Length: 453
Ligand code: GAP
Image (cartoon, rainbow, N blue to C red):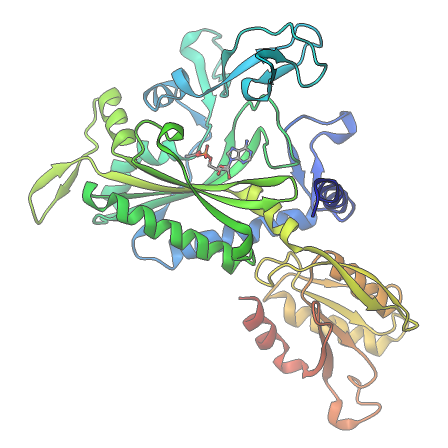
């Protein structure tokens, strides 16, 4: 696809997200708050499915990982020790002509002369560091002592709680601590829809190990994370692994991979997998004066563990899922005429709604009663949607458009009016193939649960 088609595709995706209630601009009725997004009824389901599946494979299905949920407001000493107060900044340039504030790497250079990409102006300031952290005040006093920060990553609370969690979980190396939660960065140019936001969520694992295991575990976690994306329906073809070169890596990291995805606006980072050595724990041990050592009972040695960190963005994963799922094909309308069908081909595991339930006619009490009976039956197992309004084809299309993988139609055969053998059976339609099969109501929950798990 060319860049124009890609830009059009992205526009359509953003518009669908609003129209169907996935993602809205935050504070929209007041003109919007730049870099902030609100998830609507379907977006919140999709987001939860991503987080729940991450938690399931990273924490619940493993013996060597435990979870935590840390505070967002962070002690300034934590972020001084981690290097964020000093160094978490982007170089920034101001255009004196149009007053735009630009990241230094956005400035155009033509024949050695720097130019503003907005207005073409050449009157630009020198690059200055701009700290990306949001600072706030805690308590009534408004002096230095009351400064707190909104965390720029979830990782630091894991490092700071390392000793407490080690003691209560009684884990042996290698083991991990996982966390999902909000992070905040005052990005100079939030852009590409939710891709670069000022408020976003991360899914981070800090996997502690011995120094000699670091590089092997880095490769192990890269593979685990690639499997994760495939298991939520992102095709391997659109995922790319970038080995971050020495000059771009944090000075303390011995190896970093970026997992990138082909978004319509280009190939961009979805997740970083980094071997951070013992840098973070050593920094906090030094700054707090508290030991963050691990005692190896077998060798009787004490040492500060190293760490490998797969760090993923929830919002970027949600956006990748929507971009991956967005497609069109042809399907017959009510009269058999072919029309364009917009369909989000979400993996059933990720789909916000798992099954639509449709009585063939809304003015037939028996059909409606049967359909509501099925709603009651399935609701305990999955998120379903009941719809009785409009022609059945229209109802299918509305669910295709939001990626609902299955549809159940309750018709006269369900009531046993045409063939007694078909009493208490329904039509089960699959979204992508549009194939229909006849299924007994008593088997529905089992069949669907197996297909969405
Ligand atoms: N603890 C390591 C860390 O925070 P990072 O590469 O800065 O590393 C990890 O962030 C992930 O968090 C990114 O790969 C991305 O998915 C997500 N992320 C970072 N900044 C973001 C932003 N401004 N908006 C949305 N997601 C972001």
